[in-house]
Length: 241
Image (cartoon, rainbow, N blue to C red; front, side, top):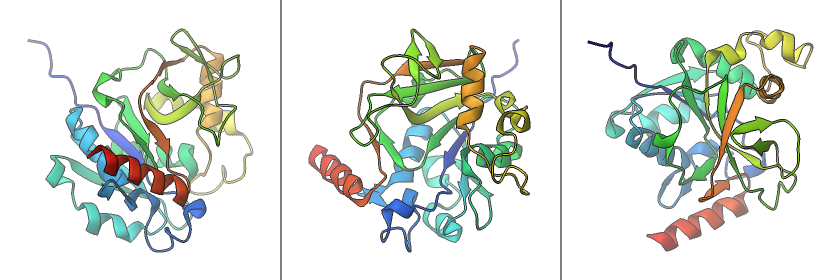
């Protein structure tokens, strides 16, 4: 009888300072801001649970003490929540992912930005990426017209025509971070303890060796980066109820 397949874990990036959302984030971390009657992060937790995820790591920094009272241990969604505390200074996406690895384990995991909203079916994502990462890309919003990466069939390229925007949703192998020092070099914060660095340089290095697959999501997606975008999302979700 074959061994049981391990359930994929997930990471929610929730450690940002939310500076563009001030004054809303003076007392509330951005992922706990409400749209459509529930906090942004709760939309993620519900979708992750529906996708069969059972363990979720939430990385926290700014107003870190607000998360546990709001979310508890995740039991109300059928989840087990773990909090990856980064201290007073967020570790950026790469450093935050590296810091969370002891909680995520050695299997591929799903990661999602805490400050987006999307109707993407997370259950459709590959449980094991073909390479080091599998990214979801979307049409470029008005505030980010040049996009991030190009999608060539199912391969994501660092450059190319018809660039799309990274949705902040992806599946990653821990091996993506194995040589992070070689990639980020002397970037500010890389020599701190714990190290602080962005994930994008590691993704671009993996793209250069053809190790990043991707998909184009045609559905709803919002980068909730300003109070105005939050209000627009809230109105849209309220209208859909």
